[in-house]
Image (cartoon, rainbow, N blue to C red; front, side, top):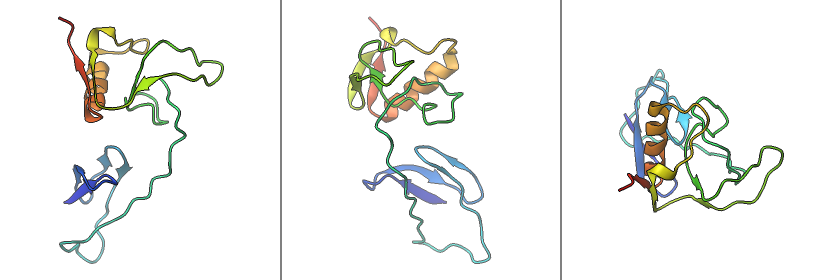
Length: 127
């Protein structure tokens, strides 16, 4: 087993040899002819993102399958990129005011909320 750390050295998960790891990055560590030893490590270089956001939808495969931010106001960027303001970390939001993508299931919403919580965006139920 290997600890997975973010660039700040914070443990974000555990990877198991021979099992796909799915998290902030996706990878697999295959067993080789020589056994791994304590202290072995791998460095994964991740290219910087575009700085752009897209509507969360867990069926996508372009990065928008993970919820990472909350748009402050409705912004239609269907035809072209548009500037907008978003919450990207450390906030409490009203869960009842989240507008989900068309057809979002309860399970998909729960997964999205958990992903936001990992970014310290906490959805509180309306009182």
